[in-house]
Length: 308
Image (cartoon, rainbow, N blue to C red; front, side, top):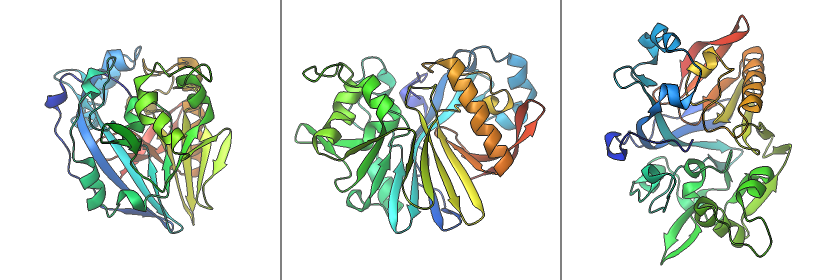
């Protein structure tokens, strides 16, 4: 998401975990790293008329939008999935002790995220798979931790699934070139050096319940994770959605999208399938109810039910 908070200290840390949700045979649990006001709505999703926010103020506030400041309310969080005996983390937040010249709101954090994972019965050595839906700072931070001044994989046994297109986009441009991106340098390259990275393109099946699919636009390698177990369906959409307003009017991409037009087309496609197949939509940054069922409404979409 990589957006600017008003002040890092103005956000409160949410409770460490919420209750687990069962989707077929897969347990899903959310672990929140932090919550805060982010960019003003008009800056985060340019072109959305203010009247749309005001028309839906009754349910957008206070979880998703602060009418007083006009800022989008958001969370940085990890989704913990237990599937076929494996523990899978979907995105890993910001991380502690980071140098972030272009995102000072993400610099030098000191949260108790690992304790929150522990409260959800997840020890670092228990994690089998880490999914980075894309390689922005707030989706890869806890890939690594500081050990004696060196960045090492936080989850030493895990396979880290990263989109090949993002790895190429954010990584070094040549074999002998150091990455100029501090996020890649401290949160991706150490995983590469440890031999824990697995790059993928197109689609990648994790197990019989979980499949990754390319969903480009926000970044070149942005992806979604589809869950299908029994009669239950869900799609973890990463940063395809930063606010529920983009469900109401999916043509509006965030200011952070590398290709806003492609991101909008991908969002319409993913939401359309979610509506048609009754997939629960699980964005990376929604506060409060972190997931929604959606339905078609004309050429756009609406929220049928909140969950999680």
